[in-house]
Length: 303
Image 1 (tube, rainbow, N blue to C red):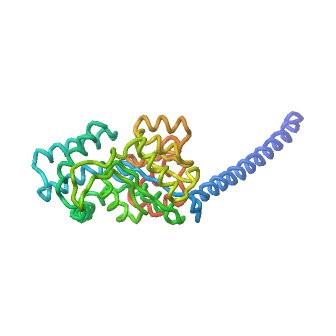
Image 2 (tube, rainbow, N blue to C red):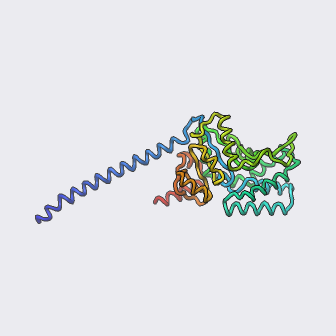
Image 3 (cartoon, helix red, strand yellow):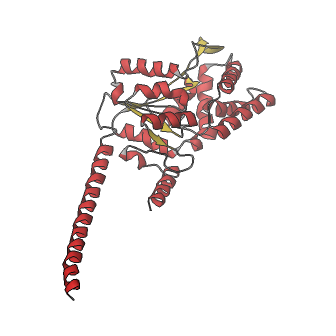
């Protein structure tokens, strides 16, 4: 009994210390959670006119390549032959299966598109682009990425698409999504008619970074307060320009680079979180369909 009397106070004391430790831990967790929430609420910063967001298009905002979808629409309207459609289909299948921009395939697609539109009026292609968006592109917009763009718009910031796709197609997509505008590859036209040549080079890789830098100067933006989103390692120059880079549906090289640089990642292809996720708090709002699935998957994983 003497021994039991000696043990009881220690056991009771240990229990008290455990309760205290548990309460302290719970309070710290709650505070940490609130701190994280507060940090997320700060981005995007509402009313920050020096900030803006730049989104790659293919496989970032939209599944697949815009140029390939545009080619399908042009084939439907008898702009080219069946053999050309087969080429577009193969390029699109490759892009969807591999999920990586193959320079040779992309160049072939651009060359094909330029030869197809040669002699057509810019206004004609813009009008057709509106129809093609409804037919092939609207249903391929990633809801989660769309929600990210909307978070910036809701914060009063401008949002641009930055893509190697023709600027006419990019402009149609940006307008239909309610974005500010688009930077894209410019095809030469004379008196409103396409010549079949480009003005300069395709807006790809380092060219995107240069376009973003030039736009930032023209708009009076502070790139350290801006955000950029892309799926491709080809866009590392653009992502590296801004203070808030995001890897969306990243290819293997971008994923590796993003992890090394501690960039935020998000993968909507599998409705799961990537290695590190840091999304604006408003990103989940309005992310219906794919966004909702991602939220469910995250909840289950946390459980």
